[in-house]
Length: 294
Image 1 (tube, one colour):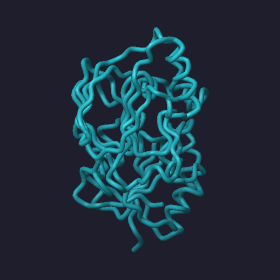
Image 2 (image 1 turned 135 degrees about the vertical axis):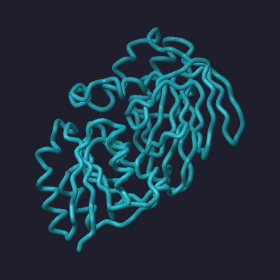
Image 3 (image 1 turned 90 degrees about the vertical axis):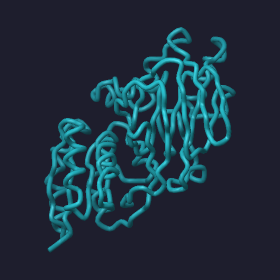
Image 4 (image 1 turned 180 degrees about the vertical axis):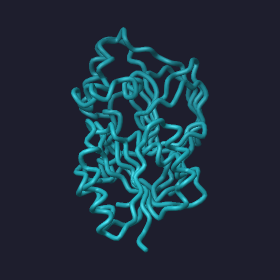
C-alpha cells in the first residue's frame, strides 16, 4: 500500500483555481503511488482541529491554497504528536512563502516537486502561542493584509494593497512600544513591527539569499519608526516601495525571541490572516520545528 497523503484544499484561493486543478493534482499524486484524501477547508478553527486530529494517520500533508491555508496546516501540525512532512501548492495572491523557498506557483510543477522533493527542516514562529510560517506584523502596513478582500488583492497586486491605506502622514498612527530582545530593551514610537522568516514579506522585506537562513533559529525583527515630517514620510514610503531598508527610520535585527509591550492594542496579521488585537506579545522561534518538502 502506498503512502497516505492528506490534501488540504482551499476552494476559494486563486480565484477558485483549486476547483479547476483538483482532479489533476489527485491524478498526479495517485499515479506516484500515494493514497489521497481530500479535505476542503471552510472555517479556520475547524480546519486546524481536523488536521491536528487526523495528521497521525498520514505520511504527508499537502496544503493547496494561499498563505492562510498554509498557516492553518502548520498550526495543526505543530500541535500534533507526530512529525508529519508538509508540502505546499501555492494558490494565493502574494505567495511570499513560496517565493522565498522557490516553490513553483504552477500547481502541476509544485505537485511534481513534492513527489520528487526532499525534506527541509524549517523554523516556525509563534506569538502568544499562535504559530505562523513566515511573518507576523502589526501597524500601518499590517491590517490591510487581512482586511482587504481576496478579489481586491488579486486586482491590486502585492505592493498596492498593502500600502493602499497609507495616503499621507496624517493617516499614520504611531504606537509607543517597549521592545525587549536578548540584545537589550528599547522604547520608541513605531508605526510598524514585524517578525519574519522570509526574503519577501509584507511588500517591504526584499532580502538577498545570503541574508536569510530558514533553519538557523533566528527571525528578522523589522521595526519602522514614525517619521518626523512630510519630507521624511515621503522618503520612507519611496524606500519601502523600492524595498530599501537603509532608511533611517527602519531597523532590522536577527532574534530568537522577543517581548513587546504596546501602549495600546494593535491588530496583528499572522501570514496575512487576522491574529487578533494584542498589547503584550511574546515571540519565539521554534528551530527546525517542521519538515517542508522542497
